Length: 99
Image 1 (cartoon, one colour):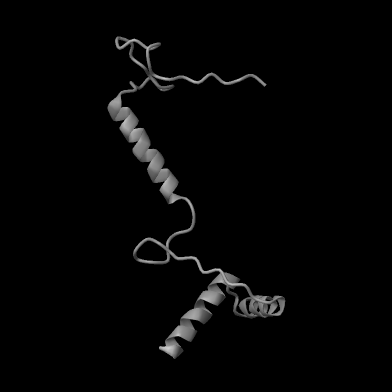
Image 2 (image 1 turned 60 degrees about the vertical axis):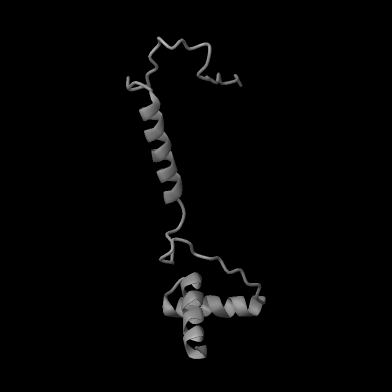
């Protein structure tokens, strides 16, 4: 497999030369800033949407027995909910009762 060439802006590109992308657009500081902003926007959109207003959804990992896991799966199936949604609702209900 051939090694891909990597290009670095430096002494090999004189200041008088205008760099362009595949579509012929001039690559300048503004172009680079917009490309970086777009890439960051795309990267931040990945994943599941936040469940919190603050933008972060804490993750709670809990170890349970196989029997409890099976019971949770069956209960979720009966209600037509995903296991995650069923557990989230069960925790919400339990905290309201306790509060």
